[in-house]
Length: 634
Image (cartoon, rainbow, N blue to C red):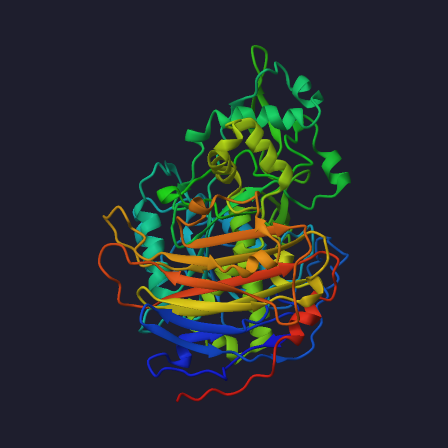
C-alpha cells in the first residue's frame, strides 16, 4: 500500500493552500497508486509542490470467493451492518425484516408510503437493497458492512403516488439527508436511483428530473448512479419465420441478425428520464450473470440467448448518446444474460426480452412466499445494473477508508464523490468482439468514417463494461494512481506519474489509461448547460512509452462532452524507459461558458499503467515513492 500526504521540495505560494489539493495513493488491494507531483499553473506563473510518498507493504491478492451460494437458513443470517450510511436508495418500500436485510437498512419513510404497500408487493425496493448489500446471490459475495439509508418513493404496487410530483419527491428525499438543520443522513455521498420514466425517453432536451439530479449532485457532492432504462417491447427479427429457425441459427449470425433488428429501432430505445443526467453515472445492462450451467439448461426451453458468448448490452437496455452528444450510458454492469421469447411467428418472427429467472437472472431477496420469510428470486435489467454500480462505488469507498482512515475521510464529500466516480468508470472497456459486431452491422463501412463508427458503438456500450474486482483490487502487473483536487477558473494542474522501469525494453502488449471526473455547475435554460468543462492533456512522454490511442474507445471529441473524460493508449513495441521515467498529465479548466463561475470545481483522476505478465510493475512503482514529509508554507 502506498500512502501519500503532504509535500516537500517545492515552493508553495501563499494563495495555494495545501488543503486545496488532496492526493493519496494505494498500490495494494485498491486500484490506486501515488501521484508524484501536483502543480498549479496559469498564464502568469506556476506554484508547484512535489509530493513525497510513504510506502508500507500490503497484500495485493484478491480474496478467495465463498464457495457456498445456497440460500441461507433462517438461523444463519448475515452479520448485521454497522456504521453511518454513505449510500442511499430511493426506491420502493423494502421488506426490511427479510433475513438478508434485517439490521442492514435505515428506512426513512418520510412520505408515509410504507403502510399502503403490501408486504407481498414490495418487490423492487427489496431486490435493489439486496443487490447493493450482498451483490448477486449466485456469487455469494461479501456483504457491505455499513447500513444503507432507504427513502421509499414508490408506494403501493411499486408505483409513484398519484398525488405527488416525482421531482418533488426526489428533491425532498435528498435535501432531507443533507440539509443544514437536522439532516437525516449527512454522510451519504452515493445515491442509487434504479428508477425512470417510461413515458419520457430522452430526445435531446433535458428533463426536469435530470436537471434536478445535476443541481443536487453539484450542490451536495453526491454521486447518483442512475439506470439507463429498459425497453421490453417486442420487435421483429427478419428473416426468420419461426422460433425454431431462430434458435437453430449459429453464432455470430444470430447476434448479427438480432443487432440488425435492434438497429432499426434506435430512435425508439433511447435513455429514459432521468438517465440523461450530466453529473450522474448512467448505467446500462450487460448480458452477464452467474447462473450455473445446470440452471441455465433447466429453464431455458423456448427462450433464445441472442448474443452469447459475446459480452454486450442487453437487447432491452436503453441506448445513448446523452445530452449534447455526450457518452451515455457511461458504463455497463451485469444485468443478466437476457433471453428472447417468441411473441408471434408465421409471416415473421416477433420476440421480446424475458424477465429475470433461474435460467438467466441475478439472485436477490424477495417478499415472503408461502410462509417462507427468507425467500429469494431473480431480477434483471438496468435497475439491477445500477444497483451493482452503486455497490461497486460503495466498495471503492470502503477500501479507501480502510487503508487511509481519517486521511481519506477528511476529504470533502465532493472530492470523495468525484474520486469514486473516476475509479468506477476507470476500468470500463469495450469488448473487442461486440464493438466489432456493432461496427460491422451499423457501419458506415468506409474506414474513413471511424468517428461515426465509434458513435454507433458508444450508443450501445458507453465507455464499456466495468470490472468490479479491478475497480477495487490491484494486481502485480498493474499499478493504478489516483488524485483529487480543485480547479479555479481557467487554471490547470500538472500531475506526474512514474513509469516502472521493468516495462522498458519488452516488446509485449502494454497500456496506460486515464480517467478524469468532475461535477459541473449547470446553467438551466441555456444551450451550454454544462458551465464548467475540464480537459485532460497528455505530454510527449507517452511517445517514449510507445503507445498510441486505443481504437476501442469513444472518439476524443465524443469523450469530452460530459463530466467524464476517459482515454486509453495501447502499444506492443518496447518502451524506452529509465529508472526515473515518468509521464505528465495536465488537468485543465477551460474558460467557463456563459457567466464566469467563481467557485473552484473538484475533480478526481485515475491513471493505470499495465503490462500483463510483468509482475514487477507493482513493486517498482511502490519503490518510486519516498516517505511523506510534512509541508510548511514559505
